Amino acid sequence: MSSDCRLVKFRLTRIFPVHHEEPAQIQMVVVTDRPVLGFAAALLALKLLSAPKDDVPYRPEIGDVLFQPLPLLSDLVAAIEGITQSPYSHCGVVVQKNEEWHVIEAAARVTTTPLEEWIDRGRHNQFAAFRLKPDYEQQIPQFIEALYAYQGRPYDIQYDLDDEAIYCSELIYKGFRDATGENLGQLVRLGDLDWKPYKDIITRYGGDPPPLDRIMITPKHLSEAEQLVKIFEHTK
Image (cartoon, rainbow, N blue to C red; front, side):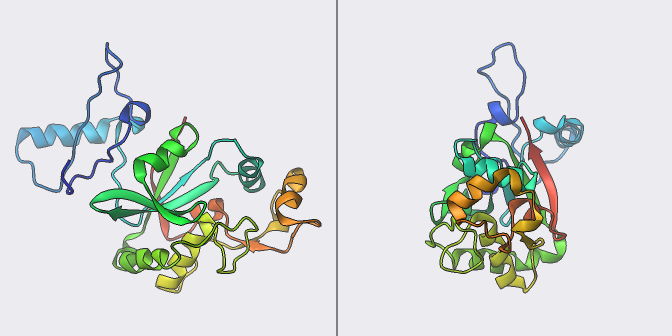
């Protein structure tokens, strides 16, 4: 598929189902940046505008901020989602690498992951895509460059805002701040969140007593940033 295509190339049968008599078959509309003239173009536009939400593919752009719920294989994932009362337990930013779509993220370390693999890793392939508002389009290259400046940093299991280690939403928050001078989302205090049901998990990772005065940026509060607009969501 050429690099000017705007259609994400991943397992469309699971994320964008198209029903047939034979389930193994799929259809896929590829929208490119090249002009398409005539009656076919009008039919294509009508199809995209009238299609149900899950039939319209996500078309990534550099700088998109993605959020997902991770599999509930760790009590830490349950704690992140429960404390913030949100389905988002992980996030990353869309970049291009060797003309392929990737996500830069803070996982075990800050690294890039192919977009298909990143989506596959989520719980039931669920994810949401947010895009920076047009006022910030010119700053996206600086945003991406700032994210790469943290590449290789280890994951911060303590969820501190220092630079020695870094967690997923912290990476995006700091990258945007470094590029624009603005905060992306609202910093929150752990003690102001719904932490009590998860006290045992918090003390296991953060020590006893729980660090209730710790200031952090959660995936939920990052997604609520005024600079972002949700442009796609795939739910179970």
